[in-house]
Image (cartoon, rainbow, N blue to C red):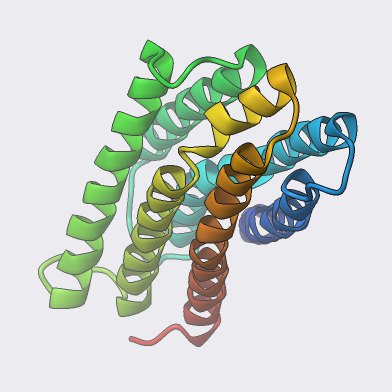
Length: 218
């Protein structure tokens, strides 16, 4: 029963990550459509922001659910205390992410900086542990090491997306305050268009991680 419940949680994380990304991807086209009224584009942007919290939440929950599943399935041997620590840290990180979303914190806010630092720390840890498993330095099944590396690649791609869409925020604020202009629309359209291939790369990485989980190479 425990394994089934944890497996379900891990699968739901994948579903909400991919599903939320697909919804945000589709909504982004409404945001960048200059033929739509500003009010409609603003409503689409709000929907986009809300939808984007599904993959953001799923990303953070991927690690604790995956580690717990690996532990109950016997692929790794961690103490109950270690599992609790992983969940506490993950939920604290999730709280930061939701605080940023609900409070609409500016890019320079301390909480945003902390969230970004955590992402880099997790990314580095995943690469080191995953690489250690693949190299045989850390005792764990090969497929777990591969999944950790793929998750690290997904996080790295997400950070890349942030860089690509950086011009979007100021341009969209200008759209709301002063109305649409060809120059503003060009910046918005270009920023979202540049980010879409990276988003699709995240989808490919998610499918790859799921495939590795079913394949389970040793």
